[in-house]
Image (cartoon, rainbow, N blue to C red):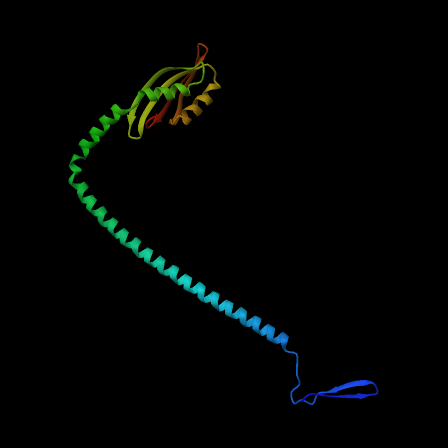
Length: 191
C-alpha cells in the first residue's frame, strides 16, 4: 500500500501506510555479495593450495622411496665390491711397489725445473737441489742465491703460485754479494 500525500499549510507530508516500510538495502546487498565472493575465493584458494601441497607431498614420498631403494642397492653393491677386493688383498703390497716405481718414472723433471726457474726472481740462481720422495709427494731441499733480500718475498709468492707447498726457510747467509738461502718445500706433481 502506497503512502498518501497530504498538503497542509504548504507542507508536504507523506504518510506511508504500508505494513512494512521500504528501506534502501542496496548497500547491504552489495556488501553481502562482496563478502560472499571473498569467502568463496578464500575457500577455493584453500582447497587448491591443500590439493597442491598434498600432490607435492605424494611426489616427495615417492622420491624418498626411490632414494631408499637406490641406497639399499648401493649398499648391496658396496658389499659385493668389498668381497671382490678381499680376493685381491694379498697382491696389495706388490701393487703398491709397482705404483711407486711407476710414480718415480712418471715424475716430469722438465716441468718441475721450468716451474722452479719461473719462480726465481731476476739475477737469482739455483745453487743446489736435493729431492726426496714422501707419501704426500716429493719433497725438495734447495739452496738459492738471491741478489737482494727483498727478492725472498717475491720468490716465496712465485713458488706458492706455481703449486709448491709446505715452504720452510731453513737457513740464510750473506756472502759474496748474494743472500744464500736454504729452504725446503713439497710438490705433489707439477702440471
